[in-house]
Every structure is written in C-alpha cells, then in structure tokens.
Length: 347
Image (cartoon, rainbow, N blue to C red; front, side, top):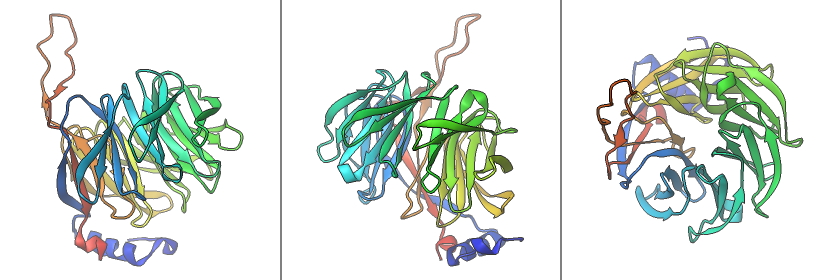
C-alpha cells in the first residue's frame, strides 16, 4: 500500500493493519430510541456538553450521549432542518424551514429567546469561529443569512446563485465551503468579506449534498447524488479523486484523528473511505445501516457516528396517471443507529 509519510500516526498505523487483515473498520454499537411522529433531517453534536441535537418535524430532540437517552426537546420550530449550539454563549440556533426564521434558544432551559428572519426555507447551518458568526443556508432562497449569535442580529445576506445544501468551515483559510446542489459546484465564501469569491466544479459529481473537510491536508469531500463522493483540493479548487457510494446520499463527515471520510446514504449504506495518497481516495468499508439512514453526525471524541432512521409504511395506491406518494414514517419508530470503530482500529 502506497502511503504518504506525513499522514502516518499511531492511530493510522492500527487502521492500516486492520485494513490489511481485512477487518471491519466500523461496527454496530447500539440503538437509541427517539420515538414521536414525523420525519427528521440534520443532526449535530456539541462535544463540550456531550449532547446530540436531532431535527424532528417541528421540534429538536436533545440526546445525552453519555446516557444514550433523550433528555429534552426544543419545541415550536416549524419545519426545522438543523440546530447548531454555540457553547460559549450558552445559546443554540435552529433553522425553521416553514417560517423562514432562525430560533435563538437558551441551552440551559431549552426555551426560545427570540427569532431572526432568514431567507426562504433555511436549511443547513455552520458556525464560523474566527468572526464568531452563524451561517444559515436558505435552500429555496438561494442565499446565506449571516447572524451574529451574541447580539442575535443579522450581519449580512450573501447571494449564492443556486440551491445551497450542506457547508463546511475552513478556519485556517477564513472560508466557508457550500455545496450548490443545482449547479454541481462548491461556492467558496470569504468569511471576512461575506461574499462568494470562487466557484469550484465538482464534475464528475452531480447533485452535491453532504460535505466534510480535512483541513490539515486541504481536502474537501462532497457526497453527490450520482452515487459518488468527490475529493477536491482546496488549494487548487480541482477535483483530485473520488469513490463510488450508495444512492440517496445526504450526510458526510470527516474524522481528523482516524483520517476517515464518511458518506451516509438513504439506501441503507454508509461508505467509509480514506486518503491513500493526495490524489487517491479508497473505500475501506461499505457499512450496512438501515433504509432511510441518510443523515449523520460524528462525535470527534469517541469517533462514533450517529444515523437516524425509522420504519416506513407504503403510501396509498395512486389514482391512474398520478405519481405514487412517498412512504410515511411509522409513529414512534424513530431511532438513532450508533456505530463505532472496531477494537482493531482503536488500538
């Protein structure tokens, strides 16, 4: 196996040995019941509080990762897509897609303090630590609302020229990278200027959704709906590699310590890959999850990944000439699938 020396650590050496022996990289650890009714979307982890926040219909479910159980809810968040905690301020923010607003939430009480206007259908969000700002990506508004979380006020609105999906923050470069789904590109936002300064093609990737960053090695990973995860060089803006993945991708993550890239897909698979060389991405494992497990969150402390899914019931038979509807979620079946690195990887 050809390997760039600068990427080898003790943890990576154990990983390489596990791969050489044909061992699984990740395995099932447990399931955490969530329950309730309706669908779900983005989940995020606050490692300082050891909490996970799961967007669920009109509320955000709060999970204690130490207890592996639900400890609370943030209610009145219509059509919520995402929640981001800002621990330094003891505040959190939700993107409420059905009311074009972001809720400001007290992390201690889980009560809403105020609301901030956004663009149409606010979706994914990221926190940019250099300027201490929150970026809210408006899916149908084709824009990004930048919020000062301390004052809970609008800082800027950035036109994106297309439909934004997930985003990743490059703190060292002072940039925010956002997948533009209908343009098959990444919009590069200068965090100081609050403007798009470059657009990088993801070809041959099409319909990008999830995104993750390996900041140390200047590699960006984009999960695309034509069943591939593209690896892009953030210094040149060029695609340098890629691997096949499953269908219905939505989430991506990158583990800095283990140097693993993940793409979670609705077909019930999560692809786990690593950078074998600067221009080569290699699949280590196609982890079998469950149908519908399309979004994910990575805990950087434990290296565990969390994927929500539920049971589905088929839609009613459509009338002649009418397209069939989507399957509906069976009430009280929502759960988190938890997977972690195997012993061979950890040691």
